[in-house]
Image (cartoon, rainbow, N blue to C red):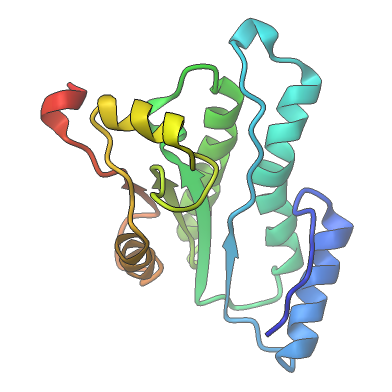
Length: 180
């Protein structure tokens, strides 16, 4: 197993990571998962160039640097971890929604070019993730959104990277009678 730290928003670090993985695997690189993310919530009036860079760096720029670092690999899978914020928005998350929409567009572009790519707009996971926490979970559940369990999420990810579906998929368990 190879464990490396990498700031996906930094092209040099991403290239170093991809080179280390290729070396560990004797040159073979079959797939990548881009799961970077940072929050800098605030109303639109509170957003600044700094808060936008903080969120766009790992998400949108990270996907672009990963694309560049893997451009010579015939990837069988390229999974981008987007967010339900790109699908539904979120209070104080204009920057986060926009950055995740970039991932959705990137996956669509990859597919149009004939390469592997899928962006999954994830809802909140039950045990881990950026939305982990009792208060956030309570707010989501009250709004009609259920949490993604580990086995449910892994099954969705496996189906998403099969390449058979659309380039942008949502995994947002909901009780629609409460949501609408």
